[in-house]
Image (cartoon, rainbow, N blue to C red; front, top):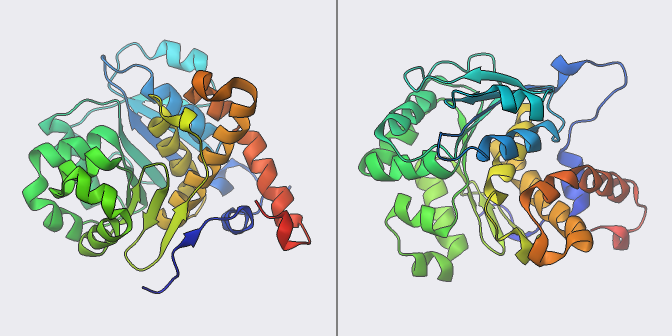
Amino acid sequence: MDELKNGITAKRVAKLLPKRNRNTHKGCYGKSAIVAGSEEFLGAPVLSTKACLRSGAGYTYLFTPIKERASYALQMPEAIILPLSLKDGGAFRGFDAVAIGMGMGVSVSLADFTERVLQSFTGRLILDADALNSLAEYKREGLAKIFANKKCDVLITPHCKEFSRLTGESVEEILQNPVTVAEKYAREWGITVLLKNAYTVITDGAKTVINERGTAGQAKGGSGDLLSGLIAGLCAQGLSAFDGGTAGAYLAGLSAELAEERYGEYSLIATDVIEYLGQAFLRLRVAENADEQGDDE
């Protein structure tokens, strides 16, 4: 392995972020798409899109099959909200990063759609939640070939149970050897794996880092939705799938720690974490400008 497995620091993450010059415009900071939601899961698109809006991306689009989209526009007036057809896998030309799967439900149509996006999209693609569950249910035997034919830089963001469904490895084996198992499939599939747990593993098979930031308060519904949206926004600004996963995991964890100081781990919810993302970004800048190594987070 090319790089020592180590924890991620604030200075390291700060260096990954693009510099924001005063004489710029929204087109300089990328175009991101969130593909999320169903009539059963109405909240996932809100969490993912709000986190993406807080990431620094120039444009944030929400594509959703939910028919009543007007309420989303009221909650997120900065986002561009469009209808989604799972029959069109080529809808993302011109986008820099796309995140698919949050709260969409498991279906063969979503599995087929995800495969078509893999074959046509050329930016950074984040696959989460039901995109992964649908691939596991309907495409698992052909996953190696599907990923081999991809045109994009892919990051998958499973928790251990979702990774078990995808790989056929037992949850126990994954929990006992998370780094080894994540690296194995990252190499075999030619993708980046962000394996969520108390300590999150991010690996592309050659480079591996461990995110130690976070809190038990994140063990709530919606935490994964916001993480995927945040990563999509970071990747839209030019970060690779690996760097976007690294920065996103760290920022989400740091934001959760900051929010927990106010709300406590029992009452912490995903919207609180999104609320404190700005403070987390400010902490990165402080760390970047610190003169002493001991000032690093």
